[in-house]
Length: 103
Image (cartoon, rainbow, N blue to C red; front, side, top):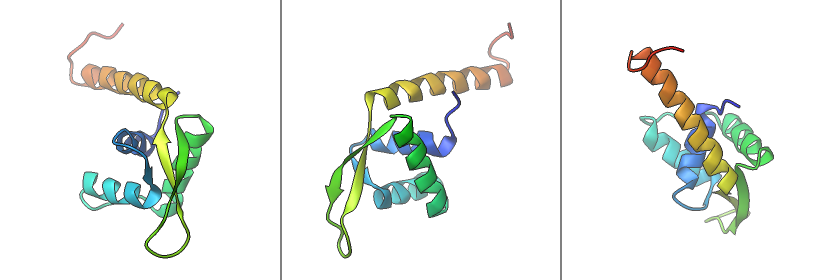
C-alpha cells in the first residue's frame, strides 16, 4: 500500500512523541518552508492513519482556550508501514538516479 507524503510526515512527527493536530500543523509548517496543507486535508490524513492503525489517540491535552485537544501517537504498525514505504521510495529514487538496475 502506498502511503501519502503528508501521512508519512505526520507519522514522522509523531515519532517524536504524542501530540495534537495543532502541534502537527506547526511541525509540518517548519518542515515545508512555512507551507501547510489545509486543515481538512490534515484531518483526512489523520483519519486515514487512524483507520489503518498507523496512529492511535493517546489522550487529550488541555488547550490554552477552548475544548481539550486530542493527542495522537504513532503505533508499532505505523512504524512498520512507514519503514516499508520508505524502502519503496528509496528504491524508486535509486532507480530514477541510475543507482540500481531495473529487474
